[in-house]
Amino acid sequence: DAKTTQPTSMDCAEGRAANLPCNHSTISGNEYVYWYRQIHSQGPQYIIHGLKNNETNEMASLIITEDRKSSTLILPHATLRDTAVYYCIVRVYNAGNMLTFGGGTRLMVKP
Amino acid sequence: DSGVTQTPKHLITATGQRVTLRCSPRSGDLSVYWYQQSLDQGLQFLIQYYNGEERAKGNILERFSAQQFPDLHSELNLSSLELGDSALYFCASSVDQGVGYGYTFGSGTRLTVV
Figure (cartoon, each protein chain N blue to C red):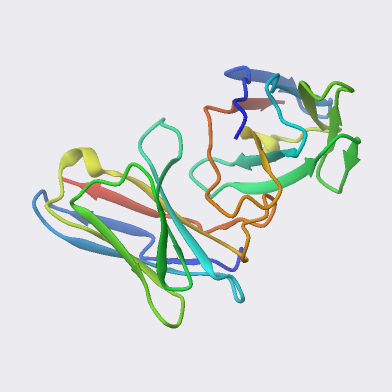
């Protein structure tokens, strides 16, 4: 799996968009970008994934640069419940093995 | 409810003791993964089972062992416990082929060794 780099922590005001960056400059052509988050002491939760096109679901949007070397997870209207650690993971679609978590970004949404 | 059930939720035990953590995967999932998360640390992969067979091993201590039973539930056995084994232990399950979005995590077992 390609290595990812994320900021250690970020703050966001409640109601504003939270933009979480991820650098994955060594990504291979068959590797997807996945985002999971872990709310305090809970199990990680899948958010969204993409290959090269921008993706949107009910939770978030994922913007992947044209060269695929970086991506941004966007929470359009952050709430206090979005305070969590966000993990960017790059891996082959059906690798069939475990997810490998890095340090992630600790997002603090403030009132 | 994620569909992955872990018991017990909390466990307090003394050093040197042995405990068993249990995980029931989401219905239809054949793979089970165990992770350890110490205080303010990242998620460390321990071991994976697929349909009863060990598939991958991570940084699992020799004092730890696991198995997956015919009904697909899994148990993680921790023995000769040390203070440093205090952590959250998560179980996750996935369908065959481990598609990246298909991992479902349980709510974890918080182990405290005193």
